Amino acid sequence: MNKYELALVVNAKIEDDARTATVEKAKEYITRFGGQISDVDDWGKKRLAYDIQKMNEGFYYFIHFDAEAGVPAQIEENVRIMDNVLRFLCVRADEA
Image (tube, rainbow, N blue to C red):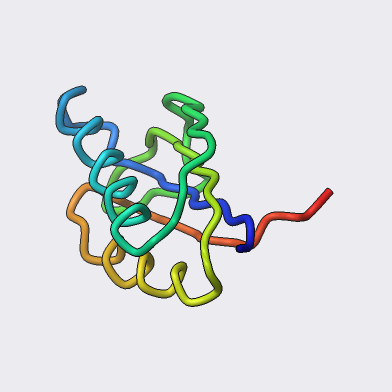
């Protein structure tokens, strides 16, 4: 099992419960494909470096999880089509 981190930038113009549901859906994808979530960091609302879909702010979430090598590709495939996710990035975390 490898350690991974999924970074999500979620639309800041949606309601709190819709934003929570978006993060829960991403967590559900991780567990559905065999990953084990170890930590979720909520960085809150931050200003974006550039406008995305005419928005200049977004909520940042970092989900740390353990999974097999093929799992991140499956997660990205599903997160890519989520409505309220502005940007995402899944990377392998350092084993430090």
